[in-house]
Image (cartoon, rainbow over all chains, first blue to last red; front, side):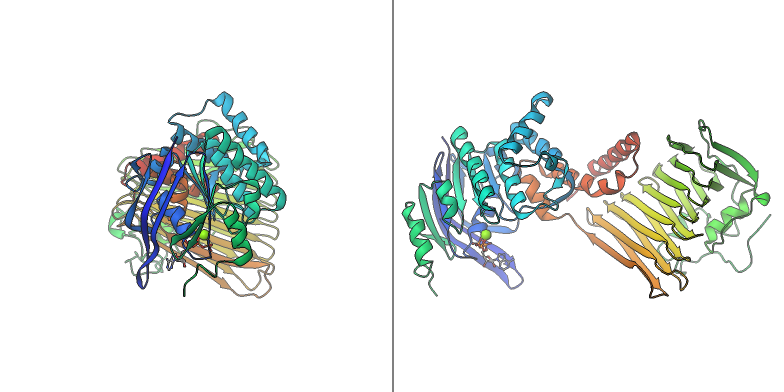
Length: 250
Length: 362
Ligand SMILES: Nc1ncnc2c1ncn2[C@@H]1O[C@H](COP(=O)(O)OP(=O)(O)OP(=O)(O)O)[C@@H](O)[C@H]1O
Ligand SMILES: [Mg+2]
Protein backbone atom coordinates (compact mmCIF):
# COMPACT_ATOMS: atom_id res chain seq x y z
CA UNK A 1 0.00 0.00 0.00
CA UNK A 2 1.47 3.32 -1.13
CA UNK A 3 0.31 6.89 -0.78
CA UNK A 4 1.24 9.92 -2.85
CA UNK A 5 0.45 13.00 -0.82
CA UNK A 6 0.36 16.40 -2.49
CA UNK A 7 -0.13 19.27 -0.06
CA UNK A 8 -0.65 22.91 -0.93
CA UNK A 9 1.71 22.54 -3.92
CA UNK A 10 2.73 25.83 -5.50
CA UNK A 11 4.79 25.94 -8.67
CA UNK A 12 6.14 28.72 -10.89
CA UNK A 13 7.92 28.81 -14.25
CA UNK A 14 10.57 31.30 -15.25
CA UNK A 15 9.49 33.39 -18.20
CA UNK A 16 11.11 36.30 -19.95
CA UNK A 17 8.85 38.61 -17.98
CA UNK A 18 9.91 36.98 -14.73
CA UNK A 19 8.49 34.22 -12.59
CA UNK A 20 4.93 33.13 -13.39
CA UNK A 21 2.87 31.26 -10.80
CA UNK A 22 1.07 28.26 -12.34
CA UNK A 23 0.05 26.00 -9.45
CA UNK A 24 -1.69 27.81 -6.59
CA UNK A 25 -2.05 25.28 -3.83
CA UNK A 26 -2.85 21.77 -5.06
CA UNK A 27 -4.07 19.24 -2.49
CA UNK A 28 -4.51 15.63 -3.54
CA UNK A 29 -3.93 12.23 -2.00
CA UNK A 30 -3.66 9.13 -4.16
CA UNK A 31 -3.55 5.68 -2.58
CA UNK A 32 -2.64 2.38 -4.20
CA UNK A 33 -5.52 0.97 -6.21
CA UNK A 34 -7.26 4.35 -6.56
CA UNK A 35 -7.87 6.10 -9.85
CA UNK A 36 -8.18 9.88 -9.75
CA UNK A 37 -9.29 11.61 -12.92
CA UNK A 38 -8.20 15.21 -13.33
CA UNK A 39 -10.14 17.31 -15.78
CA UNK A 40 -9.76 20.97 -16.50
CA UNK A 41 -9.43 23.58 -19.19
CA UNK A 42 -6.34 24.04 -21.38
CA UNK A 43 -3.60 25.91 -19.63
CA UNK A 44 -5.01 25.33 -16.15
CA UNK A 45 -1.79 23.64 -15.02
CA UNK A 46 -2.49 19.91 -15.23
CA UNK A 47 0.76 19.06 -17.04
CA UNK A 48 2.61 21.41 -14.72
CA UNK A 49 1.36 19.31 -11.81
CA UNK A 50 2.45 16.11 -13.55
CA UNK A 51 5.91 17.42 -14.49
CA UNK A 52 6.51 18.97 -11.08
CA UNK A 53 5.89 15.64 -9.37
CA UNK A 54 8.27 13.94 -11.83
CA UNK A 55 10.90 16.66 -11.26
CA UNK A 56 11.19 18.47 -14.58
CA UNK A 57 13.90 21.14 -14.18
CA UNK A 58 11.76 23.82 -15.84
CA UNK A 59 9.46 24.14 -12.83
CA UNK A 60 10.29 25.84 -9.54
CA UNK A 61 8.51 24.66 -6.44
CA UNK A 62 7.53 27.76 -4.49
CA UNK A 63 5.59 26.08 -1.72
CA UNK A 64 3.93 22.96 -0.39
CA UNK A 65 5.04 19.35 -0.38
CA UNK A 66 4.87 16.05 -2.23
CA UNK A 67 5.57 12.82 -0.37
CA UNK A 68 5.46 9.17 -1.32
CA UNK A 69 4.83 7.00 1.73
CA UNK A 70 6.01 9.88 3.87
CA UNK A 71 9.28 10.40 1.97
CA UNK A 72 9.94 13.84 0.49
CA UNK A 73 9.66 13.44 -3.28
CA UNK A 74 10.70 17.03 -4.04
CA UNK A 75 14.13 16.40 -2.50
CA UNK A 76 14.79 13.51 -4.88
CA UNK A 77 16.52 13.70 -8.26
CA UNK A 78 14.40 12.81 -11.28
CA UNK A 79 15.72 9.25 -11.53
CA UNK A 80 15.31 8.69 -7.79
CA UNK A 81 11.62 9.55 -8.11
CA UNK A 82 11.24 6.89 -10.77
CA UNK A 83 13.12 4.41 -8.60
CA UNK A 84 10.84 5.28 -5.70
CA UNK A 85 7.90 4.07 -7.81
CA UNK A 86 6.58 7.13 -9.64
CA UNK A 87 5.87 7.03 -13.34
CA UNK A 88 4.80 9.80 -15.71
CA UNK A 89 3.28 8.92 -19.07
CA UNK A 90 3.94 12.16 -20.89
CA UNK A 91 1.54 14.21 -22.94
CA UNK A 92 4.36 14.75 -25.44
CA UNK A 93 6.90 11.90 -25.26
CA UNK A 94 10.40 12.96 -26.29
CA UNK A 95 12.39 11.67 -29.27
CA UNK A 96 15.90 10.45 -28.44
CA UNK A 97 17.92 10.04 -31.67
CA UNK A 98 20.31 7.11 -31.91
CA UNK A 99 18.97 5.32 -28.83
CA UNK A 100 17.01 2.18 -29.69
CA UNK A 101 13.83 1.31 -27.83
CA UNK A 102 15.31 -2.02 -26.77
CA UNK A 103 18.46 -0.40 -25.39
CA UNK A 104 16.40 2.28 -23.65
CA UNK A 105 14.02 -0.24 -22.08
CA UNK A 106 16.85 -2.45 -20.89
CA UNK A 107 18.79 0.48 -19.41
CA UNK A 108 15.72 1.82 -17.71
CA UNK A 109 14.54 -1.53 -16.32
CA UNK A 110 18.08 -2.21 -15.07
CA UNK A 111 18.12 1.13 -13.25
CA UNK A 112 14.67 0.67 -11.70
CA UNK A 113 15.07 -2.98 -10.70
CA UNK A 114 18.62 -2.45 -9.48
CA UNK A 115 19.95 -5.31 -11.61
CA UNK A 116 20.07 -6.20 -15.27
CA UNK A 117 17.15 -8.37 -16.37
CA UNK A 118 18.05 -11.98 -17.15
CA UNK A 119 19.03 -12.24 -20.79
CA UNK A 120 17.05 -15.45 -21.15
CA UNK A 121 13.71 -14.04 -20.06
CA UNK A 122 14.11 -10.38 -21.03
CA UNK A 123 13.50 -10.63 -24.77
CA UNK A 124 10.36 -12.65 -24.16
CA UNK A 125 9.15 -10.23 -21.51
CA UNK A 126 9.45 -7.27 -23.89
CA UNK A 127 7.87 -9.16 -26.79
CA UNK A 128 4.94 -10.19 -24.63
CA UNK A 129 4.40 -6.68 -23.30
CA UNK A 130 4.53 -5.29 -26.84
CA UNK A 131 2.12 -7.89 -28.13
CA UNK A 132 -0.31 -7.08 -25.32
CA UNK A 133 -0.33 -3.46 -26.54
CA UNK A 134 -0.58 -4.52 -30.20
CA UNK A 135 2.83 -3.00 -30.92
CA UNK A 136 4.84 -4.33 -33.84
CA UNK A 137 8.03 -5.96 -32.45
CA UNK A 138 9.96 -3.90 -35.04
CA UNK A 139 9.57 -0.91 -32.73
CA UNK A 140 12.23 -2.44 -30.47
CA UNK A 141 14.88 -1.64 -33.06
CA UNK A 142 13.69 1.88 -33.79
CA UNK A 143 15.00 4.95 -32.01
CA UNK A 144 13.04 6.12 -28.99
CA UNK A 145 9.89 7.90 -30.22
CA UNK A 146 11.65 8.99 -33.41
CA UNK A 147 9.09 9.14 -36.19
CA UNK A 148 6.45 7.45 -34.02
CA UNK A 149 2.90 8.55 -34.68
CA UNK A 150 1.05 10.25 -31.83
CA UNK A 151 -0.75 7.05 -30.92
CA UNK A 152 2.41 4.93 -31.18
CA UNK A 153 4.16 7.24 -28.72
CA UNK A 154 1.35 6.79 -26.22
CA UNK A 155 1.47 2.99 -26.51
CA UNK A 156 5.21 3.16 -25.99
CA UNK A 157 4.62 5.10 -22.76
CA UNK A 158 2.28 2.41 -21.46
CA UNK A 159 4.75 -0.28 -22.55
CA UNK A 160 7.33 1.34 -20.32
CA UNK A 161 4.85 1.50 -17.46
CA UNK A 162 4.13 -2.19 -17.89
CA UNK A 163 7.83 -3.07 -17.67
CA UNK A 164 8.75 -0.62 -14.90
CA UNK A 165 5.83 -1.57 -12.64
CA UNK A 166 5.45 1.71 -10.74
CA UNK A 167 3.47 2.24 -7.54
CA UNK A 168 1.84 5.47 -8.66
CA UNK A 169 1.38 6.48 -12.30
CA UNK A 170 0.48 9.85 -13.72
CA UNK A 171 -1.08 9.57 -17.16
CA UNK A 172 -1.06 12.97 -18.84
CA UNK A 173 -3.58 12.86 -21.67
CA UNK A 174 -2.56 9.34 -22.62
CA UNK A 175 -5.89 9.06 -24.43
CA UNK A 176 -5.31 12.07 -26.71
CA UNK A 177 -4.41 11.00 -30.23
CA UNK A 178 -5.52 7.39 -29.79
CA UNK A 179 -7.93 5.82 -32.23
CA UNK A 180 -10.87 3.80 -30.85
CA UNK A 181 -9.05 0.50 -30.95
CA UNK A 182 -5.85 1.90 -29.51
CA UNK A 183 -7.81 3.52 -26.69
CA UNK A 184 -9.22 0.14 -25.75
CA UNK A 185 -5.83 -1.61 -25.99
CA UNK A 186 -4.08 1.05 -23.94
CA UNK A 187 -6.87 1.17 -21.35
CA UNK A 188 -6.74 -2.60 -20.97
CA UNK A 189 -3.00 -2.27 -20.44
CA UNK A 190 -3.51 0.28 -17.70
CA UNK A 191 -6.17 -1.86 -16.04
CA UNK A 192 -3.91 -4.90 -16.22
CA UNK A 193 -1.11 -3.10 -14.42
CA UNK A 194 -3.56 -1.62 -11.97
CA UNK A 195 -4.81 -5.06 -11.03
CA UNK A 196 -1.49 -6.85 -10.85
CA UNK A 197 0.37 -4.05 -9.05
CA UNK A 198 -2.38 -2.33 -7.11
CA UNK A 199 -1.36 0.79 -9.01
CA UNK A 200 -2.54 4.21 -7.93
CA UNK A 201 -3.40 6.42 -10.93
CA UNK A 202 -3.67 10.12 -11.65
CA UNK A 203 -5.43 10.26 -14.99
CA UNK A 204 -5.35 13.63 -16.69
CA UNK A 205 -7.87 13.80 -19.51
CA UNK A 206 -10.22 16.01 -21.48
CA UNK A 207 -12.61 13.24 -22.44
CA UNK A 208 -15.02 10.96 -20.62
CA UNK A 209 -14.50 8.25 -23.22
CA UNK A 210 -11.40 6.84 -21.53
CA UNK A 211 -13.26 6.87 -18.21
CA UNK A 212 -15.61 4.25 -19.61
CA UNK A 213 -12.62 1.93 -19.87
CA UNK A 214 -10.67 3.04 -16.84
CA UNK A 215 -13.19 3.58 -14.07
CA UNK A 216 -12.21 6.53 -11.87
CA UNK A 217 -12.89 6.42 -8.18
CA UNK A 218 -12.67 10.21 -7.99
CA UNK A 219 -12.99 13.04 -10.45
CA UNK A 220 -11.32 16.39 -9.73
CA UNK A 221 -11.91 19.62 -11.54
CA UNK A 222 -8.72 21.58 -12.12
CA UNK A 223 -8.84 25.28 -12.81
CA UNK A 224 -6.34 28.11 -12.58
CA UNK A 225 -3.71 26.03 -10.84
CA UNK A 226 -5.76 24.23 -8.20
CA UNK A 227 -8.44 21.61 -7.65
CA UNK A 228 -11.74 23.46 -7.40
CA UNK A 229 -14.14 20.57 -7.05
CA UNK A 230 -14.02 16.86 -6.34
CA UNK A 231 -16.64 14.20 -6.80
CA UNK A 232 -17.34 10.72 -8.07
CA UNK A 233 -17.53 9.45 -11.67
CA UNK A 234 -20.81 11.31 -12.21
CA UNK A 235 -18.91 14.62 -12.06
CA UNK A 236 -17.19 13.73 -15.36
CA UNK A 237 -20.52 13.45 -17.15
CA UNK A 238 -21.64 16.75 -15.75
CA UNK A 239 -18.43 18.38 -17.02
CA UNK A 240 -18.92 16.89 -20.44
CA UNK A 241 -22.38 18.43 -20.62
CA UNK A 242 -21.76 21.81 -19.03
CA UNK A 243 -18.10 22.49 -19.68
CA UNK A 244 -15.93 24.39 -17.20
CA UNK A 245 -17.77 27.72 -17.33
CA UNK A 246 -18.91 27.61 -13.73
CA UNK A 247 -15.36 26.92 -12.49
CA UNK A 248 -13.51 29.51 -14.50
CA UNK A 249 -13.51 32.87 -12.83
CA UNK A 250 -12.48 35.78 -14.96
CA UNK B 1 63.75 18.74 -55.00
CA UNK B 2 61.14 21.36 -54.64
CA UNK B 3 57.80 21.92 -56.29
CA UNK B 4 57.09 24.96 -54.19
CA UNK B 5 56.67 28.09 -56.17
CA UNK B 6 57.38 31.47 -54.79
CA UNK B 7 53.68 32.25 -54.97
CA UNK B 8 53.30 30.50 -51.69
CA UNK B 9 54.26 32.09 -48.44
CA UNK B 10 54.42 30.79 -44.93
CA UNK B 11 50.98 31.46 -43.40
CA UNK B 12 50.83 34.22 -40.85
CA UNK B 13 47.43 33.36 -39.42
CA UNK B 14 45.67 36.20 -41.20
CA UNK B 15 44.80 34.03 -44.21
CA UNK B 16 41.22 32.77 -44.39
CA UNK B 17 42.48 29.19 -44.49
CA UNK B 18 44.66 29.59 -41.40
CA UNK B 19 42.83 32.10 -39.26
CA UNK B 20 41.46 29.48 -36.86
CA UNK B 21 44.66 27.47 -36.50
CA UNK B 22 47.12 28.15 -33.66
CA UNK B 23 50.24 28.29 -35.85
CA UNK B 24 52.59 28.43 -32.88
CA UNK B 25 51.67 24.85 -32.04
CA UNK B 26 52.44 23.47 -35.51
CA UNK B 27 56.13 22.75 -34.83
CA UNK B 28 56.98 24.33 -38.17
CA UNK B 29 54.85 21.98 -40.31
CA UNK B 30 53.51 25.03 -42.13
CA UNK B 31 56.75 26.98 -42.15
CA UNK B 32 58.38 27.00 -45.58
CA UNK B 33 61.75 27.96 -44.13
CA UNK B 34 61.97 24.80 -42.03
CA UNK B 35 62.85 21.43 -43.56
CA UNK B 36 60.89 18.43 -42.36
CA UNK B 37 62.07 14.86 -42.39
CA UNK B 38 61.03 12.23 -44.83
CA UNK B 39 60.66 8.79 -43.32
CA UNK B 40 57.33 7.35 -44.31
CA UNK B 41 56.04 5.31 -41.42
CA UNK B 42 52.79 4.14 -42.91
CA UNK B 43 52.81 0.36 -42.88
CA UNK B 44 50.54 -2.59 -43.28
CA UNK B 45 50.51 -6.11 -41.95
CA UNK B 46 49.32 -7.92 -45.03
CA UNK B 47 47.63 -7.14 -48.29
CA UNK B 48 44.74 -9.14 -49.68
CA UNK B 49 44.98 -10.51 -53.22
CA UNK B 50 44.19 -7.75 -55.70
CA UNK B 51 45.84 -5.06 -53.61
CA UNK B 52 49.44 -3.95 -53.85
CA UNK B 53 51.41 -1.45 -51.85
CA UNK B 54 54.71 0.00 -53.00
CA UNK B 55 57.06 2.88 -52.51
CA UNK B 56 57.65 4.99 -55.62
CA UNK B 57 60.01 7.89 -56.22
CA UNK B 58 58.07 11.08 -55.78
CA UNK B 59 59.45 12.57 -58.99
CA UNK B 60 58.00 9.70 -61.01
CA UNK B 61 54.60 10.08 -59.37
CA UNK B 62 53.56 13.66 -59.83
CA UNK B 63 50.48 14.82 -57.92
CA UNK B 64 47.14 14.27 -59.68
CA UNK B 65 45.61 17.38 -58.22
CA UNK B 66 46.64 20.90 -57.50
CA UNK B 67 46.31 22.47 -54.11
CA UNK B 68 46.94 25.82 -52.53
CA UNK B 69 47.29 24.36 -49.07
CA UNK B 70 50.77 25.34 -47.98
CA UNK B 71 51.15 22.42 -45.59
CA UNK B 72 50.23 19.91 -48.29
CA UNK B 73 52.63 21.58 -50.73
CA UNK B 74 55.37 21.44 -48.18
CA UNK B 75 54.65 17.76 -47.49
CA UNK B 76 54.83 17.11 -51.24
CA UNK B 77 58.15 18.80 -51.63
CA UNK B 78 59.62 17.12 -48.58
CA UNK B 79 58.61 13.59 -49.60
CA UNK B 80 61.14 11.83 -51.81
CA UNK B 81 58.93 8.76 -52.04
CA UNK B 82 55.23 8.09 -52.33
CA UNK B 83 53.39 5.18 -50.78
CA UNK B 84 51.14 3.85 -53.54
CA UNK B 85 48.26 1.56 -52.69
CA UNK B 86 46.64 0.07 -55.76
CA UNK B 87 43.40 -1.87 -55.91
CA UNK B 88 43.21 -3.89 -59.11
CA UNK B 89 40.39 -3.26 -61.59
CA UNK B 90 37.29 -5.37 -60.86
CA UNK B 91 38.76 -6.56 -57.56
CA UNK B 92 36.16 -6.88 -54.83
CA UNK B 93 37.98 -6.83 -51.53
CA UNK B 94 35.64 -7.87 -48.76
CA UNK B 95 37.99 -7.43 -45.84
CA UNK B 96 39.17 -3.94 -44.90
CA UNK B 97 42.71 -2.97 -45.89
CA UNK B 98 44.47 -1.61 -42.81
CA UNK B 99 47.30 0.90 -42.92
CA UNK B 100 48.91 1.99 -39.67
CA UNK B 101 51.06 4.66 -38.13
CA UNK B 102 52.24 4.34 -34.57
CA UNK B 103 54.48 6.44 -32.39
CA UNK B 104 56.39 8.44 -34.91
CA UNK B 105 58.06 10.17 -32.01
CA UNK B 106 59.24 13.75 -31.91
CA UNK B 107 60.66 14.00 -35.44
CA UNK B 108 58.52 15.92 -37.88
CA UNK B 109 57.43 13.76 -40.76
CA UNK B 110 56.18 14.41 -44.27
CA UNK B 111 54.12 11.77 -45.99
CA UNK B 112 52.73 11.33 -49.50
CA UNK B 113 50.21 8.62 -50.16
CA UNK B 114 48.35 7.70 -53.34
CA UNK B 115 45.42 5.31 -53.28
CA UNK B 116 44.24 4.15 -56.66
CA UNK B 117 40.97 2.24 -56.91
CA UNK B 118 40.72 0.49 -60.28
CA UNK B 119 37.68 0.34 -62.56
CA UNK B 120 34.72 -1.27 -60.83
CA UNK B 121 36.79 -2.32 -57.85
CA UNK B 122 35.26 -2.30 -54.40
CA UNK B 123 37.25 -1.90 -51.19
CA UNK B 124 37.56 -0.31 -47.77
CA UNK B 125 40.82 1.29 -46.69
CA UNK B 126 41.39 2.13 -43.04
CA UNK B 127 44.24 4.37 -41.91
CA UNK B 128 44.85 4.02 -38.18
CA UNK B 129 46.88 6.81 -36.63
CA UNK B 130 48.01 6.29 -33.05
CA UNK B 131 50.80 7.28 -30.72
CA UNK B 132 52.76 10.52 -30.77
CA UNK B 133 53.53 12.30 -34.03
CA UNK B 134 54.33 15.51 -35.80
CA UNK B 135 52.92 14.68 -39.20
CA UNK B 136 52.05 16.48 -42.39
CA UNK B 137 50.49 14.32 -45.07
CA UNK B 138 49.10 14.62 -48.55
CA UNK B 139 46.84 11.77 -49.52
CA UNK B 140 45.46 11.50 -53.04
CA UNK B 141 42.69 9.06 -53.73
CA UNK B 142 41.83 8.27 -57.33
CA UNK B 143 38.64 6.40 -58.09
CA UNK B 144 38.56 5.04 -61.62
CA UNK B 145 35.15 4.77 -63.31
CA UNK B 146 32.70 2.56 -61.45
CA UNK B 147 34.96 2.10 -58.43
CA UNK B 148 33.52 2.02 -54.95
CA UNK B 149 35.87 2.99 -52.15
CA UNK B 150 35.37 3.63 -48.46
CA UNK B 151 38.26 5.53 -46.94
CA UNK B 152 38.34 5.61 -43.16
CA UNK B 153 40.90 7.57 -41.17
CA UNK B 154 41.10 7.20 -37.43
CA UNK B 155 42.94 9.87 -35.48
CA UNK B 156 43.44 8.12 -32.16
CA UNK B 157 46.65 9.98 -31.45
CA UNK B 158 48.26 10.57 -28.09
CA UNK B 159 47.41 13.96 -26.71
CA UNK B 160 50.69 15.55 -27.86
CA UNK B 161 50.35 14.70 -31.57
CA UNK B 162 50.35 17.38 -34.27
CA UNK B 163 48.77 16.31 -37.54
CA UNK B 164 48.11 18.25 -40.71
CA UNK B 165 46.60 16.40 -43.63
CA UNK B 166 44.90 16.75 -46.96
CA UNK B 167 42.81 13.84 -48.19
CA UNK B 168 41.83 14.61 -51.74
CA UNK B 169 39.63 12.30 -53.77
CA UNK B 170 39.13 12.45 -57.52
CA UNK B 171 35.94 10.55 -58.23
CA UNK B 172 35.53 9.01 -61.65
CA UNK B 173 32.39 8.41 -63.68
CA UNK B 174 29.80 6.34 -61.77
CA UNK B 175 32.24 5.90 -58.89
CA UNK B 176 31.19 6.03 -55.26
CA UNK B 177 33.42 7.47 -52.59
CA UNK B 178 32.75 7.30 -48.87
CA UNK B 179 35.05 9.10 -46.50
CA UNK B 180 34.80 8.63 -42.75
CA UNK B 181 37.03 10.77 -40.56
CA UNK B 182 37.23 10.06 -36.84
CA UNK B 183 39.31 12.50 -34.83
CA UNK B 184 39.52 11.96 -31.11
CA UNK B 185 43.20 12.15 -30.18
CA UNK B 186 45.89 14.71 -30.87
CA UNK B 187 46.86 18.10 -29.55
CA UNK B 188 46.26 19.77 -32.89
CA UNK B 189 44.70 18.09 -35.88
CA UNK B 190 43.85 19.99 -39.05
CA UNK B 191 42.45 17.87 -41.86
CA UNK B 192 41.24 18.79 -45.33
CA UNK B 193 38.90 16.12 -46.66
CA UNK B 194 38.30 17.37 -50.20
CA UNK B 195 36.75 15.94 -53.34
CA UNK B 196 36.45 16.71 -57.02
CA UNK B 197 34.68 14.77 -59.74
CA UNK B 198 36.02 13.34 -62.97
CA UNK B 199 32.76 12.19 -64.56
CA UNK B 200 28.97 12.11 -64.20
CA UNK B 201 27.07 9.62 -62.06
CA UNK B 202 29.67 9.94 -59.32
CA UNK B 203 28.94 10.48 -55.65
CA UNK B 204 30.70 11.33 -52.42
CA UNK B 205 29.54 10.75 -48.88
CA UNK B 206 31.77 12.53 -46.40
CA UNK B 207 31.21 11.66 -42.77
CA UNK B 208 33.04 12.81 -39.70
CA UNK B 209 33.06 12.39 -35.96
CA UNK B 210 35.22 14.40 -33.59
CA UNK B 211 35.49 14.81 -29.85
CA UNK B 212 37.69 17.56 -28.46
CA UNK B 213 38.74 17.41 -24.83
CA UNK B 214 40.51 20.10 -22.81
CA UNK B 215 43.19 21.91 -24.82
CA UNK B 216 42.62 20.00 -28.08
CA UNK B 217 42.26 21.84 -31.38
CA UNK B 218 40.48 19.70 -33.98
CA UNK B 219 39.87 21.31 -37.33
CA UNK B 220 38.15 19.82 -40.37
CA UNK B 221 37.92 21.79 -43.59
CA UNK B 222 35.71 20.04 -46.10
CA UNK B 223 35.80 21.12 -49.70
CA UNK B 224 33.51 19.69 -52.37
CA UNK B 225 34.17 20.88 -55.90
CA UNK B 226 31.16 20.09 -58.08
CA UNK B 227 33.08 20.66 -61.28
CA UNK B 228 31.08 18.23 -63.44
CA UNK B 229 27.35 17.64 -63.82
CA UNK B 230 25.18 14.81 -62.47
CA UNK B 231 27.24 14.24 -59.35
CA UNK B 232 26.12 13.98 -55.76
CA UNK B 233 27.62 14.89 -52.40
CA UNK B 234 26.51 14.39 -48.84
CA UNK B 235 28.49 15.79 -45.93
CA UNK B 236 27.66 15.01 -42.31
CA UNK B 237 30.05 15.85 -39.47
CA UNK B 238 29.18 15.55 -35.81
CA UNK B 239 31.31 16.78 -32.95
CA UNK B 240 31.34 17.06 -29.19
CA UNK B 241 33.49 19.31 -27.04
CA UNK B 242 34.23 19.11 -23.38
CA UNK B 243 36.73 20.82 -21.14
CA UNK B 244 38.65 24.05 -20.85
CA UNK B 245 39.84 25.38 -24.24
CA UNK B 246 38.47 22.43 -26.17
CA UNK B 247 38.28 23.79 -29.67
CA UNK B 248 36.81 22.55 -32.94
CA UNK B 249 36.59 24.17 -36.34
CA UNK B 250 34.41 22.87 -39.12
CA UNK B 251 34.42 24.49 -42.54
CA UNK B 252 32.17 23.11 -45.24
CA UNK B 253 32.86 24.66 -48.62
CA UNK B 254 30.72 23.39 -51.47
CA UNK B 255 31.14 24.87 -54.92
CA UNK B 256 28.72 24.14 -57.72
CA UNK B 257 30.30 25.37 -60.91
CA UNK B 258 28.46 26.58 -63.99
CA UNK B 259 29.11 23.28 -65.77
CA UNK B 260 27.78 21.16 -62.89
CA UNK B 261 24.14 20.81 -63.94
CA UNK B 262 21.91 18.40 -61.98
CA UNK B 263 24.13 18.57 -58.91
CA UNK B 264 22.68 17.16 -55.72
CA UNK B 265 24.36 18.25 -52.49
CA UNK B 266 23.64 18.59 -48.80
CA UNK B 267 25.98 19.34 -45.93
CA UNK B 268 25.40 19.16 -42.24
CA UNK B 269 27.44 19.88 -39.12
CA UNK B 270 26.23 19.40 -35.56
CA UNK B 271 28.18 20.24 -32.44
CA UNK B 272 27.43 19.39 -28.85
CA UNK B 273 29.01 21.64 -26.22
CA UNK B 274 29.32 19.60 -23.07
CA UNK B 275 30.97 22.16 -20.82
CA UNK B 276 31.84 25.79 -20.41
CA UNK B 277 35.15 26.96 -21.84
CA UNK B 278 34.78 24.97 -25.07
CA UNK B 279 34.30 26.60 -28.44
CA UNK B 280 33.01 25.23 -31.73
CA UNK B 281 33.19 27.18 -34.97
CA UNK B 282 31.01 25.93 -37.79
CA UNK B 283 31.02 27.62 -41.18
CA UNK B 284 29.01 26.07 -43.99
CA UNK B 285 29.50 27.78 -47.31
CA UNK B 286 27.63 27.03 -50.51
CA UNK B 287 28.40 28.78 -53.78
CA UNK B 288 26.18 28.05 -56.75
CA UNK B 289 27.01 29.12 -60.29
CA UNK B 290 24.20 27.25 -62.06
CA UNK B 291 20.45 27.29 -61.56
CA UNK B 292 20.04 23.81 -62.97
CA UNK B 293 20.49 21.69 -59.84
CA UNK B 294 18.61 18.85 -58.17
CA UNK B 295 19.16 20.16 -54.68
CA UNK B 296 21.58 22.09 -52.54
CA UNK B 297 21.37 22.75 -48.85
CA UNK B 298 23.24 23.04 -45.63
CA UNK B 299 22.59 23.11 -41.92
CA UNK B 300 24.75 23.80 -38.91
CA UNK B 301 23.84 23.63 -35.25
CA UNK B 302 25.84 24.06 -32.08
CA UNK B 303 24.11 23.49 -28.79
CA UNK B 304 24.10 21.95 -25.37
CA UNK B 305 22.37 18.86 -24.07
CA UNK B 306 18.68 18.75 -24.80
CA UNK B 307 17.06 19.06 -21.36
CA UNK B 308 13.91 17.34 -22.56
CA UNK B 309 15.83 14.27 -23.71
CA UNK B 310 17.72 14.05 -20.44
CA UNK B 311 14.55 14.51 -18.42
CA UNK B 312 12.77 11.82 -20.38
CA UNK B 313 15.54 9.29 -19.78
CA UNK B 314 15.95 10.24 -16.12
CA UNK B 315 12.21 10.00 -15.54
CA UNK B 316 12.64 6.33 -16.43
CA UNK B 317 15.10 5.83 -13.59
CA UNK B 318 18.27 6.36 -15.63
CA UNK B 319 20.82 8.42 -13.62
CA UNK B 320 21.98 11.72 -15.10
CA UNK B 321 25.49 10.61 -16.09
CA UNK B 322 24.14 7.48 -17.77
CA UNK B 323 21.45 9.52 -19.52
CA UNK B 324 24.10 11.86 -20.92
CA UNK B 325 26.15 8.91 -22.05
CA UNK B 326 23.15 7.47 -23.88
CA UNK B 327 22.37 10.77 -25.56
CA UNK B 328 25.97 11.23 -26.74
CA UNK B 329 26.27 7.66 -27.97
CA UNK B 330 23.01 8.19 -29.82
CA UNK B 331 24.29 11.45 -31.27
CA UNK B 332 27.39 9.80 -32.73
CA UNK B 333 25.80 6.50 -33.70
CA UNK B 334 24.57 7.83 -37.03
CA UNK B 335 28.18 8.35 -38.14
CA UNK B 336 29.83 5.53 -36.23
CA UNK B 337 27.50 2.85 -37.53
CA UNK B 338 28.62 3.67 -41.07
CA UNK B 339 32.12 2.33 -40.35
CA UNK B 340 30.74 -1.19 -40.52
CA UNK B 341 33.72 -2.74 -38.71
CA UNK B 342 32.39 -3.78 -35.34
CA UNK B 343 35.71 -3.89 -33.51
CA UNK B 344 36.50 -0.32 -34.56
CA UNK B 345 33.02 0.97 -33.81
CA UNK B 346 33.27 -0.46 -30.30
CA UNK B 347 36.78 0.88 -29.77
CA UNK B 348 35.73 4.40 -30.80
CA UNK B 349 32.61 4.25 -28.65
CA UNK B 350 34.82 3.18 -25.75
CA UNK B 351 37.06 6.19 -26.34
CA UNK B 352 34.08 8.49 -26.41
CA UNK B 353 32.89 7.01 -23.11
CA UNK B 354 36.38 7.62 -21.71
CA UNK B 355 36.39 11.23 -22.86
CA UNK B 356 33.07 11.64 -21.11
CA UNK B 357 34.09 10.08 -17.83
CA UNK B 358 37.37 11.98 -17.68
CA UNK B 359 35.55 15.27 -17.50
CA UNK B 360 32.86 16.55 -15.20
CA UNK B 361 30.02 17.11 -17.59
CA UNK B 362 27.21 19.45 -16.83
N1 LIG C 1 7.81 29.17 -20.19
C1 LIG C 1 6.56 29.60 -20.00
N2 LIG C 1 6.24 30.89 -20.14
C2 LIG C 1 4.99 31.33 -19.96
N3 LIG C 1 3.97 30.53 -19.63
C3 LIG C 1 4.23 29.23 -19.46
C4 LIG C 1 5.53 28.69 -19.65
N4 LIG C 1 5.47 27.36 -19.43
C5 LIG C 1 4.18 27.08 -19.13
N5 LIG C 1 3.44 28.21 -19.14
C6 LIG C 1 2.00 28.31 -18.91
O1 LIG C 1 1.58 27.52 -17.83
C7 LIG C 1 0.21 27.23 -17.98
C8 LIG C 1 -0.06 25.80 -17.59
O2 LIG C 1 0.40 24.94 -18.61
P1 LIG C 1 0.13 23.37 -18.56
O3 LIG C 1 0.88 22.75 -19.67
O4 LIG C 1 0.37 22.87 -17.19
O5 LIG C 1 -1.45 23.33 -18.88
P2 LIG C 1 -2.42 22.09 -19.06
O6 LIG C 1 -3.47 22.21 -18.03
O7 LIG C 1 -1.66 20.83 -19.06
O8 LIG C 1 -3.05 22.38 -20.49
P3 LIG C 1 -3.52 21.38 -21.66
O9 LIG C 1 -4.86 20.89 -21.31
O10 LIG C 1 -3.57 22.26 -22.87
O11 LIG C 1 -2.50 20.30 -21.78
C9 LIG C 1 -0.16 27.58 -19.40
O12 LIG C 1 -0.91 28.76 -19.41
C10 LIG C 1 1.17 27.80 -20.07
O13 LIG C 1 1.11 28.75 -21.10
MG1 LIG D 1 -1.23 19.40 -20.51
